[in-house]
Image 1 (spheres, protein in one colour):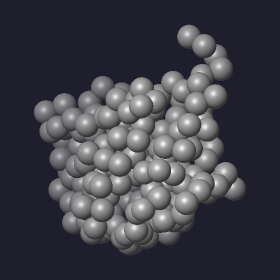
Image 2 (cartoon, rainbow, N blue to C red):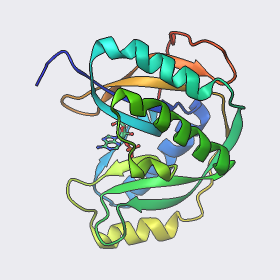
Image 3 (cartoon, rainbow, N blue to C red):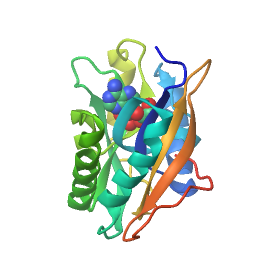
Length: 202
Ligand code: 2AM
């Protein structure tokens, strides 16, 4: 394993009020007794593609690929709504909030980003075909009773709507505790070029 490799993914960052509402929901679920590895609110994001191990030298090509995927795209709106689990109710390992709104635009964006990354050797992940905002991961699977209670109690959750007009390539640094996500480069819809990001949480 090459230490210099980065672990990267492409995501839509969420505005602070959306992260706050999801953090609030997550806190209520945790106080309901559901055990898992909870994503800190500042880390909650909408993943479009997971690249995994990435050569630092590939970042420029990824920047071009995500610029190409967003160049002719129009901004759209999404609303966090409802709950789900991956891979399914029989072996629930990931708990997430779903999305409503302009889902066709989101699917087109995910497909475009996935296609643009294929020449870079990135295999599209089926799990990103369902737009989701991960709140928690189980070490193995979630305990069924507290999970059922949480899914039942919060199934009608609706969060603040948000506008999607850019995407970001993040580097994920794993270590003790929650991952640290650092923005590397971004691409704004309809922009001919790309910009280095100046910050922004995932
Ligand atoms: P998630 O959105 O489904 O939780 C950083 O780790 C991001 O990359 C997370 O948001 C996570 O997806 C995604 N990710 C991590 N490992 C992955 C994998 N093996 N396949 C697809 N996506 C993955």
